[in-house]
Length: 153
Image (tube, rainbow, N blue to C red; front, side, top):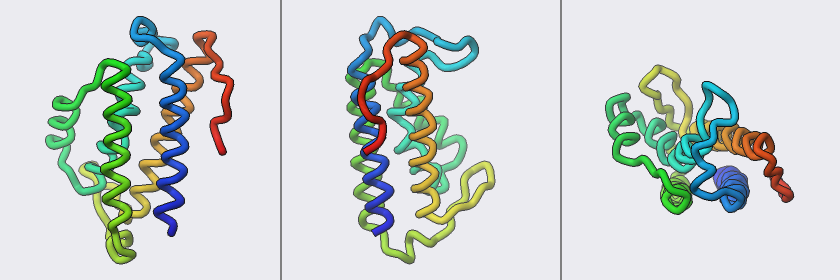
């Protein structure tokens, strides 16, 4: 029941990111609204990989395995990023829907030492995604593209 609710909220955030992506074209993606921070392309690439990457971290992937993941998967076009985001969510959602309560309470440790239950990791994935969704919205506003749609249900 709780997993379904978190996944629903994550799907709402994904939907709004996909809508914000429609405001952009390929030529705008290399804009860096704040010096020293990610460009729009880097931010969107990160967002598109985030759900799958954070899930892998929650399965105790090593730092080397995560480096390999990021090297192997690096979407750069809007189309690639949309596809990667949707597929990552679909895969992780299917996995979480199959977990039992006992599985959700099992602790897993990230390669840097923090430990959470699998359910807590799902919350962390959602929080991380919402954080960068907010960053994307702010970047669009800074570039004169204030998306005129609700970010929450």
